[in-house]
Length: 115
Length: 113
Image 1 (tube, helix red, strand yellow):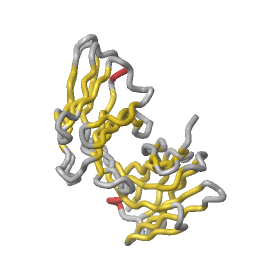
Image 2: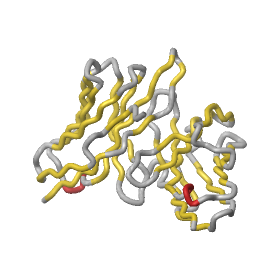
Image 3: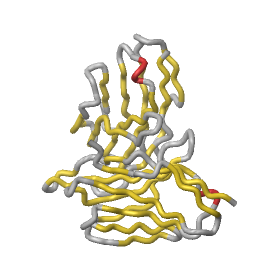
Image 4: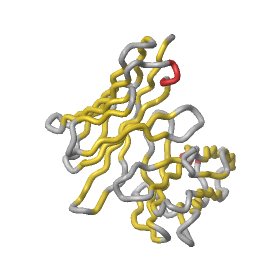
């Protein structure tokens, strides 16, 4: 049973426009969420994170939104650039009464930004 | 550069052979993780160390897999009697504090023929 779901395997966006990547989760114990970017032949690179006490976190062109009631988070990239083309993974970690679980990853969404 | 080095980058081995991978995080990263990633999937957790103590192992980690972190610095992951289903990217990650992001190395790609 997948606890972190990225239902769109791929997304294509024009350069300069907004990219929106979505992620849904099922475990209500998740309290820390992260987005990673992965280029071919490299390990995932941390992009941005958000704690469950917040509903928005922004870092330059990247903003993550968290909707706890819907168990949904999204990553917005504005403006999108060709160098953003990569696979994006959503990840989440649970907190079991002070004992933290491990990062659980979604299957990823491949973003293509076209010039 | 995440400061997490993995060696080798690629390993091709025949079924039944043993393989060992190494991970070197920077010294401040007292938490070290091993993940496995197959095509079309996200990374899947295998095991986790805090300093030299192995605190958790996934059910994915069969008895053919063993991981060590003898002095709380580098770590090794050994797979005995490899099977074709072991073919995957093996990723090492490290972090400094409990609620901080994991920083991944570039992985070791294992191909079992």
